[in-house]
Image (tube, rainbow, N blue to C red):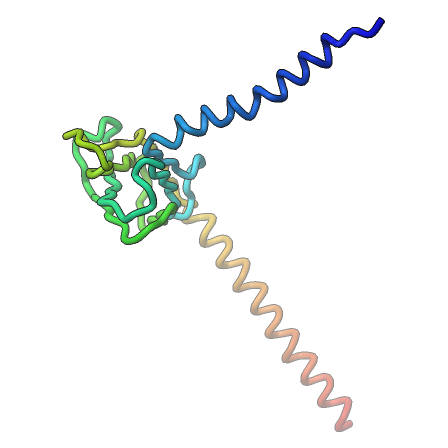
Length: 164
């Protein structure tokens, strides 16, 4: 006698997975999301990714990205207002330190007086040390000098062989 129960359970499980993913996707698409690089920026630039809710649509909205040096966003030191429809924003020129960012959508297409806010994202910037930068520069200059000397010596050797 065959036991159809394991096959039936597997079939029900496989059918329910797309429904669960769809419901999670719907919930996630109704939120304003902001994500950062996830690693320490050693060059002073990084990319922030913004997800605009499906209910708002792809139309241009008054989206702002606020930057603060405080985790509670109590003192906003800069506000970025990107133009057009975008999903990534690259920022550069940051000194060593921790920076906090939050996306804000003032007109979310509803009658609520409160703006739509994303989670706060922390971005850490710690540049390479000066010793490492100078070391790489000196190594490059040394290799370049060796290459120039080698080219000049081989050029001289070739010219003396041809004329001698």
